[in-house]
Image 1 (cartoon, helix red, strand yellow):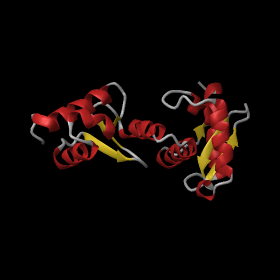
Image 2: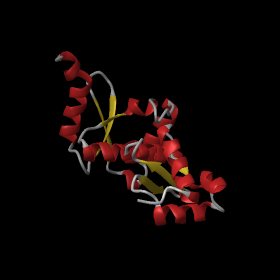
Image 3: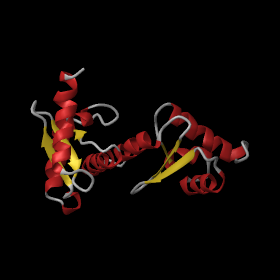
Length: 175
């Protein structure tokens, strides 16, 4: 456990406070507490308590405390911070297909924490169809028309179809 005094303590306090407010802490926001973002990162990596976690983005490091935020939720916030809607949707879909396993309702991306617009979602799904890296992301629909995404790497088509139907229709008809 790190010593809870000095600059490192201030860095950890900031990260914990942001996490308690359901926010990631970009390394650039730690600059007021350290000479620069690299110094802050070095201090955290060298001596932070075990609850302080880091995710490295394309241009920024992000920190959170798992005392207040789960890693799964932090991943959603991280993907939002990276501002890549195609990757956000694909990675979230892959996680859901692998971890739970279940398809992801497209409507979920309209909700918090994603808060995307329908045109943003539609554009991202359309873009995925033409990028080889996302060839595993497929769509399925329930009989009520609800659209779902799944990763063919982790879910078969029949399984995804059946789960989408159960989530949308079966559960509601069998309380």
